[in-house]
Length: 201
Image 1: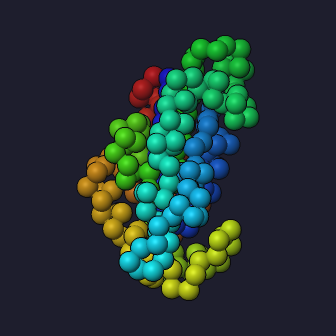
Image 2: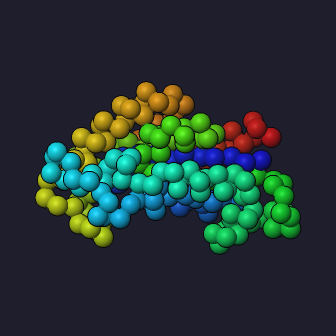
């Protein structure tokens, strides 16, 4: 059985932390990070707000992301091996899709691209309030540092715009409070995924 989980959310909300914890505990689990599909800096347009438009869907090669997901769907065993993912002994013995194979698609705009919306078996979204998001973002080190005013002038307004768009696109999302402990978030998601897997067996 193939099972795809979406882990979406606001910038610095805890998506990667949750994803990395799930990777360690779910069987035959691979991940596709949306951040790995950003275009080169010179390909990112400067918007009317004066900032490079990193927080919009056109900043990423979404077609390549979809093709990567399709590659996993076609052969999760081969995909796992090519990405250095340890498989269960049963899955390792065969090139078939015996057992459970899980893919996590993680990113901040994974529910804003129509060709991706229908592939998810489970959709999660982590939210945190403005002040906490701004505080966390200020403590992160990025390859290209945030210019002054980027958070208020671009990042947060784009988050609000895309969240509204996402809510209109996808009605199956389970919302998670990013202010609760990492353990609580993980436990809630893990239990929800396990229940869905049991129901699909």
